[in-house]
Amino acid sequence: MTANHHNLNILWTKIKEVLIITANKTVSCSFQSSEDRIPKPKILTSCYSALTKMNNILLKFRTKLITRSLWPNDHEWALHKETIQQLIEEHKLELAEFPQIITMANVRQIKKQLLTIFKLIYHKARLERRLLEQSQIQHNIKLRYSNYEEDLTKIIDSILNRERKV
Image 1 (cartoon, helix red, strand yellow):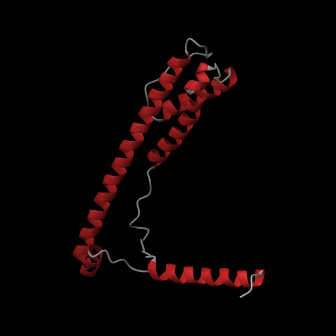
Image 2: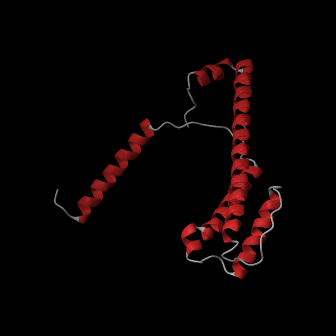
Image 3: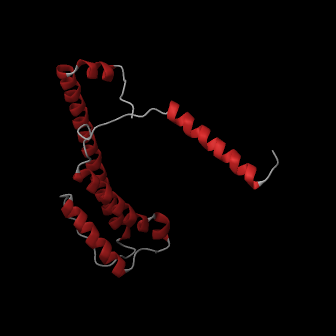
């Protein structure tokens, strides 16, 4: 084969076909019905979005920015305070008082309060995730038991990790 665009396209097409054939033969597929899935609870997703918002605010209070006196201006700080108060209410945390203006005297205390709120929401998210995992384990135990009661082939397939191919 000579090195030209036509031959290069043919080679790439053949490589692509081989990859698809190999993937179809070796990559396992499994079927999971919609009844088997448990959606993530709203509280967990709200914790993750709250953590994202808190992280964005905390990034503006990094130590290197504080040492250079580069923190949010009054208007930006007012918006951040409003967001923080909404998150506190939404997650039923202890109310926190923040000063109207950020100064060198209070910036480290503000950062400490923000970190405390972040950690509380983080721990709440961890606990919610653990509860979700526990409920999924219980769900799968009940599913396996019902398979045992109703259809022995399903329980044998699940014990042997044989899944229905799609």
